[in-house]
Length: 571
Ligand code: C2E
Ligand code: CA
Ligand code: CA
Image (cartoon, rainbow, N blue to C red):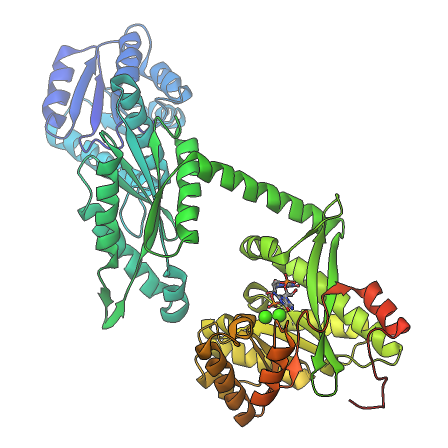
């Protein structure tokens, strides 16, 4: 149906048994289209299947098949049903006209024929069709071919390459920072940026290439007749360069970049679907490595993608079957040697009994959004366990890690409130640990949410402090209670002067702002001494306590191996 979607010259089929009429019709439309002629019904259907007309000028009264019958047959043929049919006849009864339209004709031209009249009718219908084609096959925003036309062109290119033994490169391009533009400047600005990028991409491609927009900020470029992958690499580098030139729109400068995944026919796939999914996997790899990059598809990418898919499936099942567990690691006051709180840390127990570290599955859980239900489960469990301790007279604040994805969920605040209510835990015994990156993303939104949490009475800790964006202004402007000094500084503080200096600076600043300071990853008593000397008293680390299941924590408390003062005795 789209065979001539990329041929600018429309095709007209004239069907008439009168040579005189054929001549007039030909003369009327000869310069408007490529014209084919048939003098009876059988021939008309044959020629139509071969030339795929945009428009058919169809005489009604002919020996053999009548115009109506030909029209009916064409409308029933999926390859021909798209053609616009204009009936041509000397008979003027209204029933004729009605019947013609009923059969799917779009217009009616009266004999004897007048050249200007025929031209006017045909022109009007060709314009309509061109417009309909544009809407159906081109992206309204950028004017580039859309998904439909891409599919058609890909089929043509692949067919040709199969015959000639050539290669076709499939490039999937995704802008890196586009959502940020939409969020900060609005969608109309985003649209202008996409338009400009579309223009740049098509300006810097060869005329045989197809640049199409798939939707959003995703573009596909098809490159037929590529000899070597080096040629593709060169083109891709040029495209990345072109995108990275600043885009200026109404006085605002945008610096963009993109990642591109590439698959090549016939090595990486022999149809559009497999080329697409392999280019997609390669693009994912490129994104993983950062911005402004490209990757060719490879077998290792494929096995990687499969492994991720498998992990995701396992994670979903684990969530359904409730096999995620929450471990707790106590935090201590190094001076009093008393626990001053605990951190909830998720664990995944595999069927074989071994534990999977969160570092292995949290990133994928964040990407797939599974972190939202998983995080809810952890928060719920942590609050219930802290409440159980409180009921035994042990007042310990529980820290729960909150990922950026959860924090940005609209329902986050409601979820926290619901869980606090359900569990009965006093809000001041819950501490949410967030990283600096969460705040840097949209500080105003973060502030509004933190203010609400503060109002409820929940405590806020900045996790892994010192590794993130370290824009210190937010520390003053946000209602933060605790800084957790990242373990990488603590690990090397005894041997690396600059790590020690960073800790010292963080401690001073924390003290000046009245924040509580916790050192993470404390493993050695020398680290304790040094941290105490700097003024940091609260510590978390293997030296004091490893993360353990709740039951084990309870055993430790009961047996006295975990030194705990009970409520009211202070600490
Ligand atoms: P984190 O929030 O920085 O948690 C501290 C990590 O350091 C934990 O690793 C803990 O077991 C480990 N650790 C504690 N003391 C020491 C020590 O003395 N030496 C060393 N080398 N490590 C120590 P874990 O449990 O593997 O968790 C890793 C990360 O996974 C966490 O880092 C946190 O970012 C994330 N995570 C854990 N649980 C959750 C969760 O429920 N939700 C979310 N969103 N993230 C979680
Ligand atoms: Ca943490
Ligand atoms: Ca941390």
